[in-house]
Structures are given as C-alpha cells and as structure tokens.
Length: 223
Image (cartoon, rainbow, N blue to C red; front, side):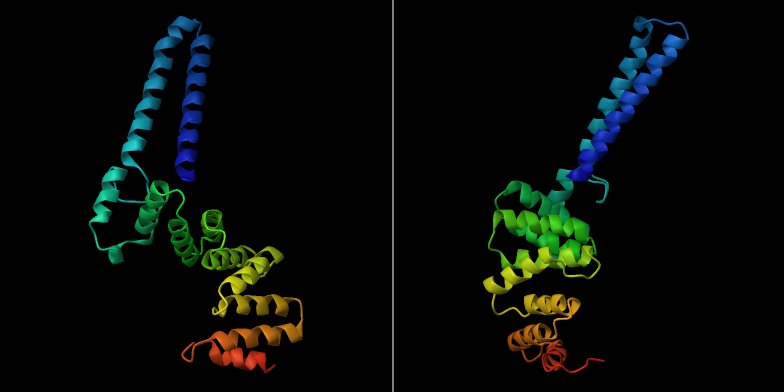
C-alpha cells in the first residue's frame, strides 16, 4: 500500500510541475491566463488517464492484468505454486478484508524475513502484535527482524521481544539462543552457558543445533 501511495503522490507532483511549466511558458510568450487554459486542461486530463490506468493495472510486481482479476485467479490456483510476491499480494488482501486478524501480517513478515527484507518484515510483525499482543511467533519474528536490521547484534529492544517470546512459548529453543547471543556480545560467560543450556533442554533429538547447544552450554569451544 505504501508503494502505491508513493506512486500516486509522485504522479500528482509531476502533473502539477508540468502544469506550472506550461503556464509559465504561456506567460513568457505573452499569453494570458485564458490562453493557458487548454494546456492546463490537457495536463489535468493526462493526470486522470494516468490515475485510471494505474488503478486498472494494480501492483507492478504481479503479471500485467487488473489487480482484482489477478487475485481472483490466484484463489483458483494451488497456493504451493505461488511466487513469494503472489503470496504477499494474497496476504495483503486478506489483511484488508480482515483488519483485526494478525495472521496475514505474521505470514507476510515471515516471507519478507526469508527474502532479507528485514525492515518490511519488522513492520508486518509489529502489525501482527498490534492485533495479537500475546503472539509469541510475532515477538520472535520482530526480534529476528531487529537483529537483521542491526547487522547481527541483539539490541535491547530485540532482546525484550525474545524474553517475552520465551515466557509465552516455553518449549521453543529459539528465544533462548538469541538471549545467548546477547550474552555473548556482552561477554557474560555464565549467562551464555545458562541460555544455551535452556535452549538445549528444549531441542528435539533430531534438531541440527543440538550438538552445538550442548557444547556451548558446557563451555566448550565450537569450531
């Protein structure tokens, strides 16, 4: 939605600028305001045509067809065949149709985070939390997005999200891993081992992180 608004604002500014230059040219040529009216009318007509065309075309990241028609076509397709942008389009519509539902924002945040679009992901996770303040998944997602934005550092705001997620979903090892990362950044060795121990205790036997967590909790060096 933000991109759409930006496009429309830019188009309006460009049209206004064109109209201003047209009027200035007429005046410099010795014409009066009346003689400028046809050109200004043309600028206005062009703006209206551009706006109508944009509303018909819809979002530029999807194939060229009316936006509503594209969404309707997507609903008849197997969701597993969607591209990430198509999935985001469907989630955007679901969010608008159900403004109190946190799930479209949560799923959109997960997709955006997987695409390394951390700032956009953070906004979606934040939107999910505004609709469901006790969503541990949204807290964990927001914390992860914040860590990506901070180039890998667990800042206090992100740490708070991981702590809350750990309290709300005590069986998930992920929040404890991020708390261990924060402790490592601050050289709090005892806390590093404790948090890794908490993560290890929550990992399933087939978790690929399990051996690393065991060694880190024991204070061993991981190569």
